[in-house]
Image 1 (cartoon, rainbow, N blue to C red):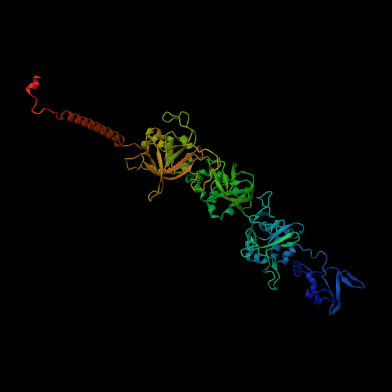
Image 2 (cartoon, helix red, strand yellow):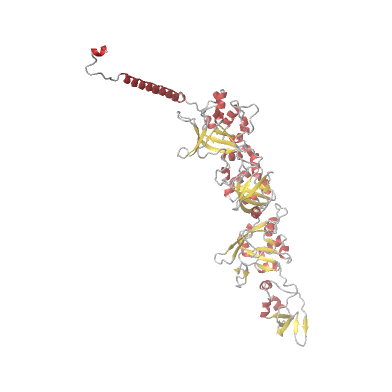
Length: 633
């Protein structure tokens, strides 16, 4: 401009006085300081009273210079439409040139040049963009960059008064994994600690940092004035502390959370990882690592075993809702059941205290999990967290599967050889099967399963050759278990709640299948807390008179069946049916009989002594004896 003024000959310049600039808006003046005006025609009107040039009054005329003449006017000469500022012009004036340049590289210029559509734009300034560098952003002109920039535009005008903590706002980003919906971002609002009346606003974790001003000629765009948005026609501008990154797939979203690593590892070990990664319009419910222990170690071992891939995949898909449910809809919505990618439904129960519990379609009676709504956004929906694992009805956890997980193949062979294969399969007793001439009821069963290592000192060949002994050993380890009844919601946050085949606390005693044949068929469980055996032990009730090595065992783990109740309890020893030695069987009766005889003999001996005392007792006679006269009389 200076070169133009000094080198152009025969130039007529209309120069506005200083006070005329005050008529401009603050941001309009910033923009004009960065642009030039040329090629416009001026309309000059002369009257006897005054002279106007395109509406501006002539203040002083004919100030001659070497290459022309200068006239002073009382207002700015602005061609029509020049000051119709768009969001782009404001962004250029407010140090958002890098952001504008990136938008044009992906053909999104219409978002900052349309003054009719209402948008709230989240703008990282040039200083913020320079701190992050081009290496942290997608390549210019790429589809990834286009998505990233669309994530900075919120349809509508969201003033600070409308924002509330925990809100989810729709953006201009349309994801393939969200058909018919737009991606959302989270809003965080808190009161400033020093100024309680002022809000601290965060968009997707990025804090608003205020608007640039021209406080200093040398740092015009580095100073911040306030946290309120800049209003440009139908557009609001918030300046943020970093560029926003759109949500990624659900597995990558959950990866940084270490407490979810076990479930993620299970997903990656199956063929369902890509399905859960890309399935559109889903809500993924991920249990904490502790959920595998809460499920029961044998159930977890089965699901994570190499031979149970189908069961594991069904469980994983049962944790993916085929609809997007954010926290607000889960807390306040009227819907209680939701279908899953596995095919069956899960049920949500909302308690008065605000807690949410999820019940699966299968598992055992009372199985449930507490839901922790997290709103971890993904490019296909959202991720929430669970306290426990959900088992669908398509997964049938039989005793046979749990025995295999308990490393009890030897015990499984014994049960099958003894005719109890139906117990392993979770079916009813075969027709004609009886025990002591009684038909067994259709109840569940809890099998005490010694590990394979527990049989190292057992002669299996001899045992297989003795059918009665074989059936007796299996019967000693089988506990009839009635299924739990009732469908009321039971809430208990104990880590071991509801995963045991039978209750083990308070030293319970249970009948076994052998109890109908032997007085020593019952089993008793106790908790032992010492250095040698810290945990539950199980023993044959009433067994005594031996070293006890075959009469009790340590409880190692357990798993619950999804059939009619019961399950498997893993123990470290084989419980041999107890047959008391002869001094136990006959000693007591013999002692009682001999003792009774002795007491009877003593009783009659005492009676005899009493009678003898009566017959030898002294009598009375007259002094001098009896005389002849007495005899004659």
